[in-house]
Length: 385
Image: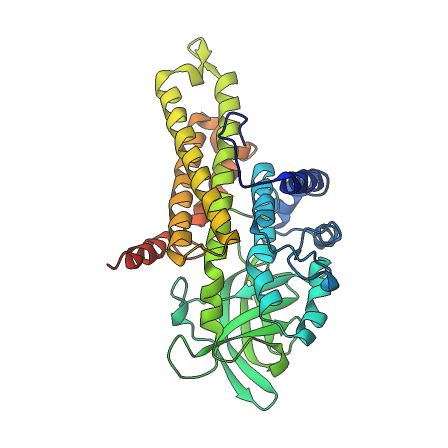
């Protein structure tokens, strides 16, 4: 974050020390491998074991399962920000810590915790969550995957797509219809383990951006999932998903603002050094005004998102507030990235320049976690409209 930004007040000394540890770890273990992971389309498994050993995976889990019991979302935010500032490991940390962890910590029983959490916090167990289907994206109620109870197992059938970490995941939390009741009562969450008969992964999907993040299709054909692999109560899957979505959307907003800040820093360095017509291109009034506008807008977004971080720590962040934050900051992120690429001129279109990767990676932010159109619908309904 730029030195001349407003002073942030949500972090105390322990968070600042945690940030230094995260940054040092990423600079040592991730930055040297970032280009390789982009080419391979996957982050090496050894990295997650190192991250687990360093205490950066599943740290919200109780100490007896390898965590530190730190249910303070500011720690999550620090990692999300540093990942963007350094441009490494894509969405993988956010998936494991911000999205998956609540399901494994809050919905599991004692036996499940003993079975899964120690390996999860150690970085040895990669977990994915499969919600989106070829015919159902932001409208989760449109999911058609089914799981029929048959004695001690559920027989799972269906397909999922756009599953983050889907190639290397050891466990997959699958949302499936377990009854013919209403949409909000008919879904359950089942944990499918790697190697289950009838569970197949499709191709690793080739994406425009976020290339180091492995994303996959999944197919479930008569997969027998033990009843003891169900998370929470049968038929409560939809409320569980809804409960965790504000946290996921805030995580996206945090990343969006951090990416915009990083892009501005890169661009300010560039426009000071690049000359045209005998002067730095940043000194031209049109460019200077554009940079001033972006700086002000990103600073405002930072203050707003920091307030949302404090709200979620206090248990006060609403669905509408999280949706609004996600929509506004990701729209702003892409606008800023597009302007920053333009200010780089032809070099901005070259893959060797960091701004080009940031621009590619920004586009999906307005789609996943619920499209921004759906986010605005959530905000609109909260207004009684």
